Length: 126
Length: 155
Image (tube, rainbow over all chains, first blue to last red; front, side):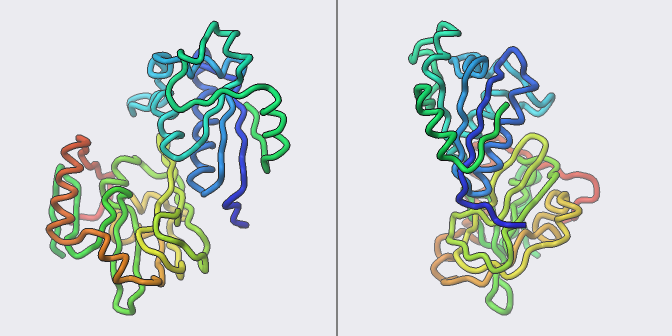
C-alpha cells in the first residue's frame, strides 16, 4: 500500500456532547492519521463546538470501563499534534465566548474553512 | 535473560530503552537492531487490534514514526529510537497484532533496522540498571500496572 505520509487531512466534526457515540471515531481517525505522519486538523462546527467548552468533555465517557472520555480523546489529539480549530460563528450558537474554550483551540472564520478544504488533500466530514 | 519486574511490568536489562517513547532496542550480532514496544506500552494500549509498520526500505530519523498501533481505546505512533533504514517488518503482526501484547520483547517485535550511527543513538538510550530505575520512577509516577493477556510470554 502506498505510504501517504506528509498528506494533509481535514476532519470536520459537527457532533458534540449530546451525541457521544458520534464524537469518538472522528478524533480516533484524526490521531491515527497524525500517527501515520500526516498533518491533521479537526474543525469543530455546529454541534461539534459544544465539546470544546471547558468542563464539558470530561463528562462524556466513550469507552466503558477504560477511562476514555471525550476529554482524554481531545488531549490525545493535541498530544499527537492534531490541530484543533473552531468556527467563530458557531460559538454564538452555544452562547460561548473565546474564554469558554479549552486550551489549545484556535478560532477561525468561515472563509478559512473554505481555504482549508481546498488546500488539504482530503476532507472527512462527520 | 536478566530482567526486573516493577508492578508486573517486565524490563530486560540487556535491552536499550527510550523511556519517554516506551520503545526498546535489541542490538543484533550483525549490528542491525530490532525495535519494539515495551511491556508498559502494550499495557497502556490494551489489546492491540492493528499494528502497521512502515515499509522495508523506509529511511527514518530518530523520533519519527516507524509504525502505527491501534487498540480499542488508543491509537498512536511507535517512534523510532534510532535513525536508519527499515530492513524488515514483523509480518506476523498483520494477522495477529496481539503478539505485541503477548510477547512484546520477542515475537511481538515491530521492525528491524540498519542504523546510521548506532553508537551515537545508543548513547542517548538507557540500558541496564539505569533503565530499570528510570522505569521504576515512571511506573510509580504514572501509577502503571502491567496487564498480560492469556498466553503471554512467561519471563
